[in-house]
Length: 236
Image (cartoon, rainbow, N blue to C red; front, side):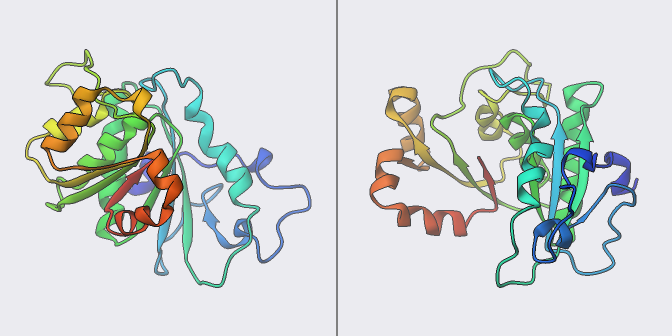
């Protein structure tokens, strides 16, 4: 199966400005899928993936439409002093079931990592962190996961142990309990005490995970730099 089989083209009518892009703007630099799927003939560094599925995003209905809103702003930014090849693969549509969406995203991310391409996933709920994590299973790689979040998403869900589905409020449970376990380390940046139970803090301490309060980061943002630099994947 080709990567293009998982994607639908971008509707550029609400993204590209009427006057077009300046040559220095990312919109003129990124190879995006509106007619033809990116060829990957040249070395690609970053691939953007939109996901139009927010069925398991708790209290965040509509986030599945987020990718095109981000593209509208992202494409207007100007390129810096670097030469990075970026492709935008388009959008993964919501599958017949959430499981179908997860399998599609897992497959795409795994293929990109094999090609040494960094995937950037935009849109959908934070439950999509789990299929992104599962992409490393076939690669037999340990994962250093960093999550930027005001709380720990450790709620119980009703999806059942046999299902790979989860929610944006419970996906960390799925990751921590996943077998085989290939989570090397988990770090949280920006949790807030009044959104976090003491029980969950004790779990983080018992598992020797790195968690950093928002106040701590506000006083010394440099704390985050080595954590982010060492990350295999980041979920925001």
